[in-house]
Length: 425
Image 1: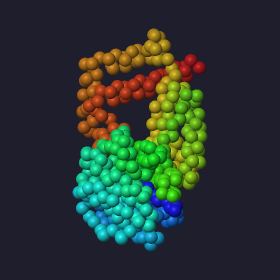
Image 2: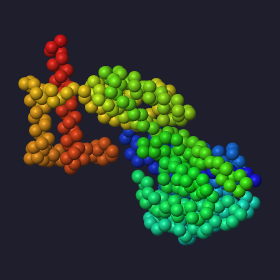
Image 3: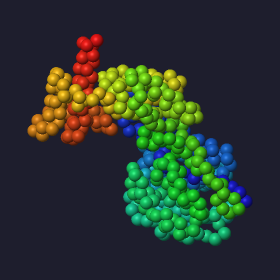
Image 4: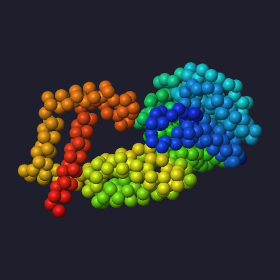
């Protein structure tokens, strides 16, 4: 006997946007609807592949529903699967734990939710499948609940559903921690894990243990292909499994080494080449891209001075390359100069005097502290959006001020060296 099932997790249906409206030209509606469209793709795939069942390993929802529309949308999609006799097995995770969801709708008969009180087993007799799972009763589950899962049932394909941080992953809080040995000793054939948003195979076979990742990236920290895992069972064993992309909008980072670039136009050409590569790999998806320009380059000062011009020209370039389907989320200019600043300091020129003053300023603790206080006073007058977010200026952090002083030095150096070149021409 042969059949397939789909393993998915971390859908975060109707996940709210966080400050996206402040980004120039942001495709707000496209991103707002992305989790729903990706979920529809998941259901389409299940129907098209005629899968036997679907397992959702936690975080179907991102938290309590804003209104009933989130639940109604989910039920409408489950009803499509019910019409095709496809069952759905799900557990709750830290984002949709039982005590977080205050609104509730009756689930269709094809949707089976595992208990949040203790591990339980559900059998699919006609397929000889035993599914074991337990959902989260509350958000902060710190104990190793996998240890209490039942051992395998002989003669069945045993599948475990677990929302867990496993042994821990960067960027993810620790919930229901467990080791590979904890999972392997149960004797299951497949562990359907959730919680980690990056696809990762922890154990390739006997048993297969993996995180499928989330089905739709929601911000720049969730880049690359997003989707589910299609699993084929043959003669009572896991025969094969493969990733299938479901995302409708893909987040990517476009990193460009500008070391060989002499001018801003050279940098633009290098970015164009990278954007074209990403667009070719997107398979028709809308792309949200962060551009990072780095390297030691002759174009460094010009990139800083013409920053606004560069950024807007890159946005225009992206629209051209992607025929309107590429949005530049942010441009990070992280280049360094090729000018030998120490050589300039040794000359008896106004430039050398300014550079010497800037260096002394950063080393003089008393003067630096006075300058920091000036910035703190300035900070109180700035609008909220400039004091918060990833690029916010923290007026209490000396390292941020040091970085800004370095940027000022770069700008001064650019203007003075450019003027010097004009005068000697």
